[in-house]
Image 1 (cartoon, one colour):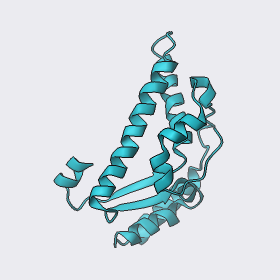
Image 2: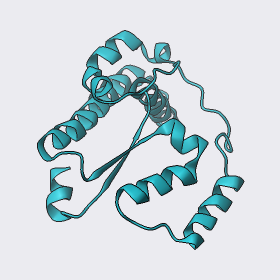
Image 3: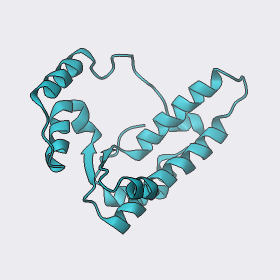
Image 4: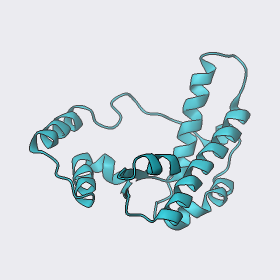
Length: 156
């Protein structure tokens, strides 16, 4: 974050919020599926540990940056808002940053969203238990994020 902000002082950041426990479970499941394509070894414990550390560090890095520099360069968008009204969510982001969304861009986004809805490529099923993880321990580890942002807990 620091390097980007220093190199591009006019950079703006869009943070899409969702229950980080749910997001982490999804990431771990995806990484495990990719890993399984290249090895018969069971890497679940390593993947769960490594990606829990990585996601925690990323979330804390964003929080640290915002504590040092404020929130002016950030737009916070809830995942549920992006899924339910993608064009409206993008329009709100543009407005916050004082930008104008062209009519052509809005039409193109609406057409794309109409053709490519959530679940277009199937459903991704996963469970924390598949990786030896529990919600309570993860919520504790990610408490700083939960305290800062109002995200509903999602079933995992």
